[in-house]
Image 1 (cartoon, rainbow, N blue to C red):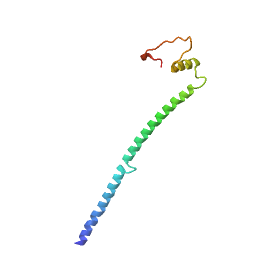
Image 2: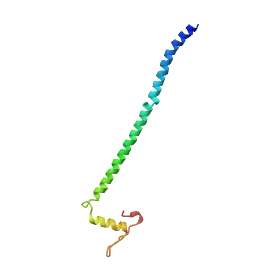
Image 3: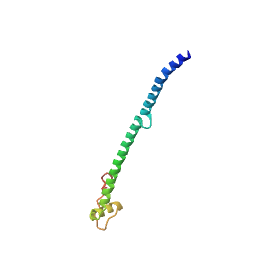
Image 4: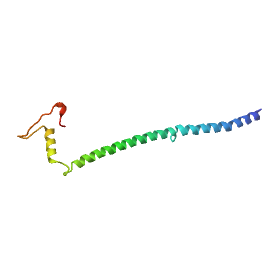
Length: 107
């Protein structure tokens, strides 16, 4: 009787162990640190990083253009004078001042 029980348990033990190991590896393939879910999270993070890099390049280009506009040869003295007068709200004696409405501001 005990021999029959041992033979029955031996016949069940090997397939059960195989099924448990298979389930373990399948679970790790889906949910583990190197599984499919982790891969999808990494792809999402990579897309966010690419987007941030693109934004950084755009901002860098904007600043590069601003710095190049500060070049001595790029500044037009008349435009600089006009812009500074508007910003400081000042004029010279004898200047003709044309007021703009609130909706039609110059800058």
